[in-house]
Image (tube, rainbow, N blue to C red):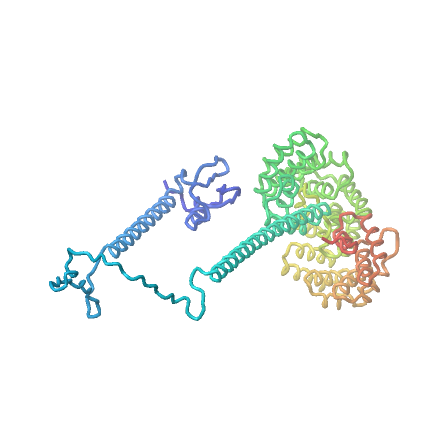
Length: 595
């Protein structure tokens, strides 16, 4: 029974070919791989609810399998026919003998006939001559001119010399052959050793970069290493979270971690880390039930595991179960220190829970967000949006928060490393844009609110709508410093640095501290160290200095050759925020440990 066209196009099949797991693929894709000899009919396939079976045993592939077998039979018959024809032709050519006759053929001469001579009785064949013959010595041709004949002493010496020369040449040839073989073996051994050394170095790089949370570099080093040979199981398990989150290899990474769970039954920590990776892989592909099962298994081993509990709360948000999400995240707040994802999730669940309009809880959560942002810069703009939305009923309370939101340099959250054991997609602007839209539609649409809406749209990649919202803001407040800085900010985000630089020089904007910070970054990107240092140096005051400013001054010091000052600034910044990627990368470069 043939499958329908839609079913044949559905990518629901996994392929086990040698040691690889390929897919998911559709029936049509598998048929094409069979015809192109990328896989064979003795490879195994299965659907999510099925078991592994040979391709030739699945009825859906019978047509392709029959076509392949017919092709093989035709090829065998053609080969046999060609071989038989060649054999018969060769036999005929050998056995057939033609008589060749021409004018140049030599006719054999018969031996002379000896006729009997009656006058000479010796000529009679019946009579023997027994007369003694006179001994005659034939002169030797070799003795002419005093030369020695064949077999003389001189000739034997020449023969011996030739023999010795042949033996010498034979040993020389043998020696050369041995030297060539030894050289080839040595070259192969050195290449193999070099490959092994290169593999070991690359694996060390991959694991080191992973520990530093430089996941792009870790993945690049790991890919180079496995081109040489397959990584050890423990290395595969360590790299699986990067494959899942960074390289989107959900199935392959999950298979590695499932094997790790089976083989590390006595090591609870490795089992928990592997189970978290499995749960994240299910979350990323939308299999929330399977993800919850994996997380519950972790809580059986460790009931207070923070990552498992937070992921369960985030799954409840994904499912739209706002009350359950609020309950789980509220409970987590009491158990653990503040975390940006917990605060963000609590804000979303509180705003989305239409059955509960608790202004007191909203103001309390806004105060918690304010307290967190005084000590951390992670998800700063996202949390400011949430704080403003929680205070939407009080214009005097939310307008200062909107101002702080607009004074943030765009896209700074991506400059922080993220724990691969957590689902960070709640912090994506595609998810938060709904809260931004609801807030900006609820409050008075002044120029700041319109500028805020423009930022939200730009962060989600809706550039055309963002320009429209920004033009509305500029029309309402053409000389407003916050609106002008938003314009420069979005120009910088789009890569238009010169245009952003021009806006930042406008007198209404030039005195803003955030304008100097963005101006310093633009100057640094363009290689103007004097301009960058002038812009950043005025912001290097106070106990809690801005991370972007610290990183900028550290980079300037390094480019100017002052490694000591650069390292001092890097240490200061990383003590404040250990996961700030620009400082982590700069530390690797400055310390000479760049791998």
